[in-house]
Image (cartoon, rainbow, N blue to C red; front, side, top):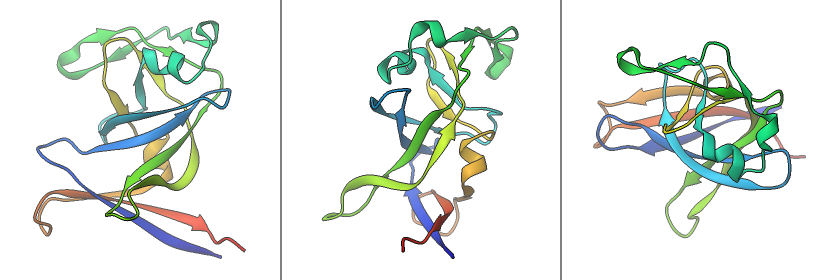
Length: 152
């Protein structure tokens, strides 16, 4: 059996931001804030995150096509032959505070230099049903809905 779980996150301005705990091939984990980006085909992370979470430089493979950003700007990207593990970092009212939330999932990002993190459709959006609500709340929010197995 499973139960639906929802995380609601407010944001300011036009940019919905969430934090993920990202784990590389070892036990090293880093927390990174990024844009919940429905316009991104795939997740894009700063190149420095690969190093920070223990990915050896020789594991990064340059892509043939690179990526294209806003305004048609082209930039080189790198990929991995294996996924990273990720989990949402939820921010809750005290006394709960900050904690890992939802399922652990595979993140198959591309990496680029001089970029911000953007969590895209191929992995992040494939894990959660995401809805944006800019009308009913006092501030814009987005909801992440995940189906989690019940603990027995």
